[in-house]
Every structure is written in C-alpha cells, then in structure tokens.
Image (cartoon, rainbow, N blue to C red; front, side, top):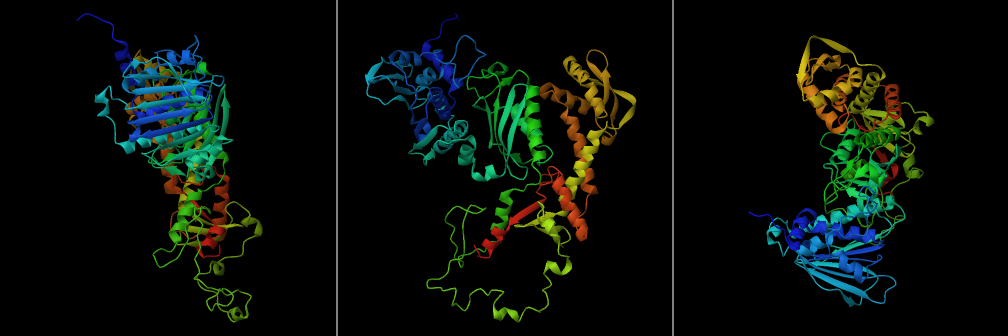
Length: 607
C-alpha cells in the first residue's frame, strides 16, 4: 500500500483516543483551560454521566473572534512559547478542543471583558462552523453533547452513568483542592449538587473535600531540599484507609498519579502501617519547570523528574520527620468508634442524632418525655450533696473501683500526655487518667513498639555485624545492574552486605548481614538491583533488617497476661511519650485509645 496523508478529522480522532478517554477526561481539559484563563468561578453541568451533556462555564478572561477560531485547531495555544521545558500552566498542547470536537458535538461561546458581545463557534464530528456573534456573559461556556457519537465503538467501553458521573465528581474534587480561591459547582440530572465555595487557605479546601476529621488527624508537612519544596498534610499512622484513593498528589499545582511518588509515601510509612492499609495525604510539590517533565503523556497525569532520587528522599524524609516530631497522638476516629460501640441501640431509646458536633460528628442526648420536670421528678438524678446520699457515704467501696488497689497518683502525672496509670484490667490493658480524658493502653502492643524502636536505633548507630561466606556467592546480572550495585557498595557494607565486581556482568558477595541468618543471596541481590534501578535506594535490605527487628521486638516485649505494678505501668506510659511513632505498634495497630471526658459525659446524658 502507498503511504498517504490522513485527513484532519482522522488525525484528531487518533489524538482524541489519547487525550479523551472518558467524560471525566473532557471535564479535566475544560476545567484546566478555565483555570489557566484566570477564572474564579467554574460551573460544571452533566447529564447521562457526561455522555449526553457536559457544560463548563467560567468567568475567566474569555476569547475574541480570532482566538476562538484558532482554539479549535490543533496545536494552537496561548500557554506555551518556544521552550517546551518552561511550562507554567495546566494545559499547553493545544489538542483538547479539536480532539473533543472530532468525537462529539462541541459548542464554544466566549466574551472578553472589554467586548460588547460574545462570539460562538461549533465543531460537530470534526466539521468546524464559522465564528458568529452572540449574546454572552464575560468568560467562556463550553458545551459538549453526545460524546463519542462519531466513534460509536468507544461507547462500548464506557461504564454506567453512575460510574462515569462518579469519576467526574472525583476529578473535580481532586482539581479543586489545589485551587482554594476558585468556587466550583458541579450539578446535573445525574447527580446531587456539589458546591465548593472559595476558601482563604488550602487547608480549608482540604477540610471541605476530605472532611475536618482528616485535618484533625493530619501532620503538617513543610520541607525544602535543593530547590524542591513539599507542603501539605499527611495523616497520622492511626488514621488510614483500605486503599490509596485518598492520596492526593500535586506537582506545581497539577494533580498527578505517579507511581514513584506513591511508592515514596508507602516507604515513608513502612514502619508504622500494615501492608493492607494506606495513609491519607494531600501533598504539594513545587519545583522549577525545567526539573520536571509533564509532557510524558497527552493526559498529563504522569510526570518524570530530572533527579527522582532527590524527590523520593524529600517525600520520605519530610514525612518521617513529621511523624517523629508529632509526639504521642491518637486518632480521633478511634474515640468516635468507641463512643459508638457504647451507645445503646434499638427503637426503645429516644436519641436525637441531628446536628454535627462532638468528636463523632453527632450531638445526641436522651430526650425527656413531654412535661418532664427534673426538679420534681421521682427519677431525678441524685446529687452527692443531697441528704439522701449521706447514708451511703461510709459504705464499702465496690470491688470494681480501681482506686481500691492503687495509690492516688501525683497531680503532675495527670498533666502528662498519657496521664497517670490507675489500673490494669484483663492483665493486658492499662487504664490511665489525664486531666480531661481516659486512656486505654494495650501494654503488649505499646512495649512492642518501644523495643522495636530501640533495636532500630541500635542498628543505625553502628555498622551491622556481617558473617563471612565460606565461598563467595557469584550473582550473574546485566552489566548496568552490576554497575549500580558496585556504586552502592560502601552503603551496602554498612548493612553488613559485602560485595564487589566480578567481571563485566556479575558481582561476588563475600559477606551477608548476620542478623538475616541463612538468606537467598541470589534473590536478595536481584531485588536490590531492581530497587536501585527504579528508586536509587537500598531500602529492600533495610526493610528485611527491620522485619527481623520487628519479629524480635514482638517476642521480646511485655506479654499479654502479665500483671504490672503501678510504677511499671507509669514507666511504660513515659517511654511511650518519649518514643516517636508509639501511637501504633509494628503491625500498624493502635497502641492506645483516648476517650475525652466530654465523650464520657455524653454517654451518660450529661451533655
């Protein structure tokens, strides 16, 4: 067959296959255009999951007739000069609008601030109309109907209306976090309205989208390294989710889904989260445009960094530093779950779960019957000062009173974060009292974390003991992997792994960490080579050593069922306060739960 030129419509449809994957992709491109135009109010309307109708209206700078005609031509943009490495806007390729017009029915209406009237242009299946004057408000309105009608085969790959509408909602939420000064409104016949008013700070916008509970259970991140700045919020170890969908990452204000950055977050929480749990984050990375490539894929969701090791180190180091500096801090959601567990249920109880408030999101109290007078009722609560109570003043203390077996603690102990130990129940749980709360500590989980951190500190303070192999283990590798391992030989030696080059495509391993015992040297070296190639780190070996330390800590810590004296319980509490990450054990489970006095009073209807 002879080589021939493709038609402009086919070219646009090919480009649309890369840029326009689903209705949410259209919304992404149109909202990014609105933000680049300086809009402070963006309204999105949908129908049929976005396949029937998508309309994005903004109050940005708008376009005149000449710009409107160029906007629907490929590779026409106002956002990019001659330097492809200097990208300071969300869009820059000039492909979105012509791609949308090639697979749907596109209408654009726009007016600049100084114009008396607006202009409109339509593109239907790649056929472009002439520009005509129309009445229009300042800004731009882009409407897309019957998406993919020109490529019906693509419709077979779309999910249901609800799934597509949900994808649009998630995308708008993800973009809105990075632009708190912009008001976003998402409405339509296929959804409930989402309204995100403009905010003064990113933290307020995060609270709008992820909830105030996340903000209350998050650590502030603010770090700089060699021109790269990382800011935002990352959850404490005891506040997690079952998947990574609530990890929001931004590079120069652009929402991204980057595996390297996700891996860095996973590495930062490696010691404090179980493998099946994920942190919640909203992190913003700012770097000079020349150090990041956002032109990896037309959808612009993937990025590449000139120095990926620097960026990974910034993420891991800043999050770990925040975790270590946070001190002892429980999740507020644990107290909420505890309050919910104690709540009486069934239809026989009358409770008002109406308005938000309190630590668990609801304000509730027993509802008195009509005409109830607490002053005259026979069932009124009796105060300790009443005469009727005096008869019981000298009665024997009930056996459940923890004070019968403990000494009244010093007042200064109650002022400590974990308070003063008052009792031990079921030979595993320490009950402590602070000035305004009750603390329940799992003694085994808490001591397990303390022993683990002590072992890690010992490992980090001196080189790891190594055991010499009777015969060196020769590992055959691609030459580039052998070069990478040789370049990290000094670092690996500190972990007790001694290796050297053995010809062009192999390394000879002469020593292995004594702590690992018998180890599959071949697999270990290949895993390290893969990790160095991807992340330029040797964390595989660190994770194996930490896993051994975690096992030793589990077997060497205070066991469940052991009775502790008051001084031992208080000593454990003080150690927890001084140890970073002690709010969770090595397996990611919480070591203690804090129940505020206000929550306890709600349980008894005192509030």
